[in-house]
Image (cartoon, rainbow, N blue to C red; front, side):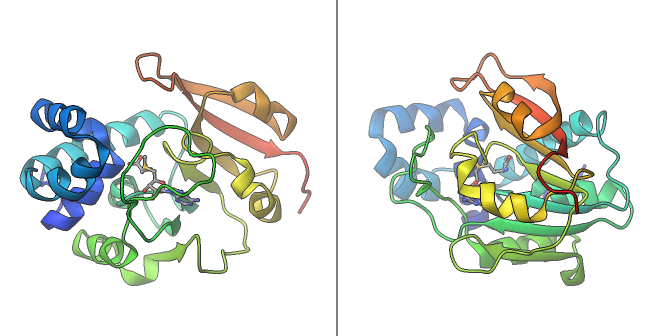
Length: 235
Ligand SMILES: C[S@@+](CC[C@H](N)C(=O)[O-])C[C@H]1O[C@@H](n2cnc3c(N)ncnc32)[C@H](O)[C@@H]1O
């Protein structure tokens, strides 16, 4: 397996997005030095870019292998919400045929990255220019994806076969931030995959809410769900 091609700044963003990729040493520094120094110094200067690249790819392969037991990705039009550096989307692309990706993300890094429930949805850890170059440098063609800045761009009003939001929508910030938008684009045929601590809440919006994974060891104790059969839109 070839690791992803990336530079230190991209490795830093990946580490902030997937804090589980930290080495025990980096985790300890985060605890001792606090969030501000971690975000602005440790994550910039005390990380191993090669290790992050290798472990990020392994993690994304693991996510893909889990998901493909439940979803056939071939030929799907996919919307990714809070996709981070899109390692999963690159793996989907290289293992399937003719997928198209629309990606909604934020374009800044918070001063002190926190990982709890973000009431106002201010937390972000991405850079859309770097995301664009990461995708191109790792085998995605420009015509295969579009990136949207959640805070500045008009989001795509079109239907998708699949919407993926791992550890983002309803994991760090309320589903409500996307409710109106999703109401405009969801069809009864769209599947939506995300992580949440309240799967039952979604039964009022979807005919089917299937739990495909439980994360009992994490602080959030979330589960991963696939929702389908959106009830309020009969496009
Ligand atoms: C914990 S990371 C998960 C990244 C990726 N899904 C993964 O599994 O590696 C959460 C991501 O959500 C993004 N984010 C936060 N608020 C967002 C919003 N309203 N819309 C889209 N992305 C958002 C952050 O910038 C961050 O990249």
